[in-house]
Length: 176
View 1 (cartoon, one colour):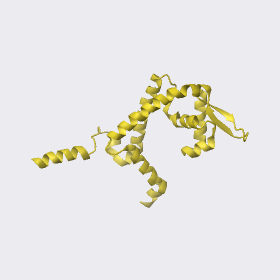
View 2 (tube, helix red, strand yellow):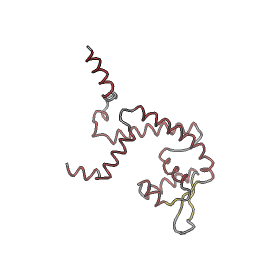
View 3 (tube, helix red, strand yellow):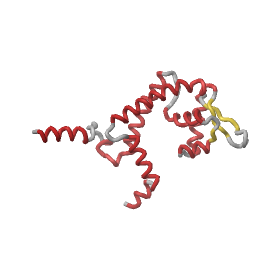
View 4 (tube, one colour):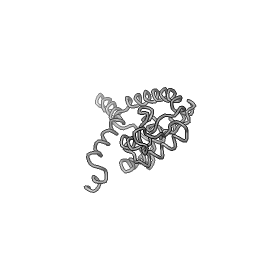
């Protein structure tokens, strides 16, 4: 009997939490992209609701650019693309959307008139404290969720990124 109690505790501690069965979950590793997208979409939906409740007209997909510009006021498109590993056109597209919302502005570089630098607009500067308050709570919540996980998602993502930096997915596929 004692061994059954031990086995029960072991299974509760080491088996994955049961997820509702659907095609994405059933496919396991084959549908990793869909599963990550579903999780990302769910987080984005909830965070956008949080922004709205804090009177911030903002989409989560703009977070990383707005954050970077807020920390490095006067940063060029190419620098951003390199730092974030985003394409140049993707950064330009996001920047235009943030400019349209009034959070950032594009100005000529004092060193090179051909180069455009992004910086916070007056609205961006005024809104920054409200964003930072929300971000602090989001970070706290995320850290709480990570602490509750058996396998830390952030660590697992870092491991996967490191593996794919060593050899990309396509090359690995070719070797199979």
